[in-house]
Image 1 (tube, helix red, strand yellow):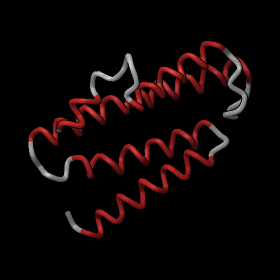
Image 2 (image 1 turned 180 degrees about the horizontal axis):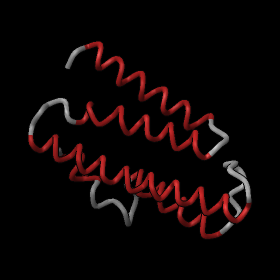
Image 3 (image 1 turned 90 degrees about the horizontal axis):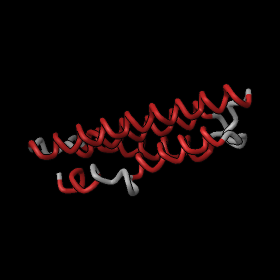
Length: 121
């Protein structure tokens, strides 16, 4: 991999993390998580081996599903509370959906079945 490309992806990974940590709005937190997802996929598949490509596709699909669930959680919270602020997560359905989305993104139990295959790839 080109060193400039690797530097760009690593910088994007740090930028996405900083955006996610410092956000007060659900959409900016989601944008930071998506920057992280799009920055790490080329780093996963840089060896051009079929297992690495398969791992990158599995990672992308799980992260896309979790991001969709995260957006649905934030829209549900905004529907019930009228607020898009991260600190105003008061509705139990929104809290459950957000917890599920974060567990999927982190590969926690019971959403961990994709995680070992991606690590092996």
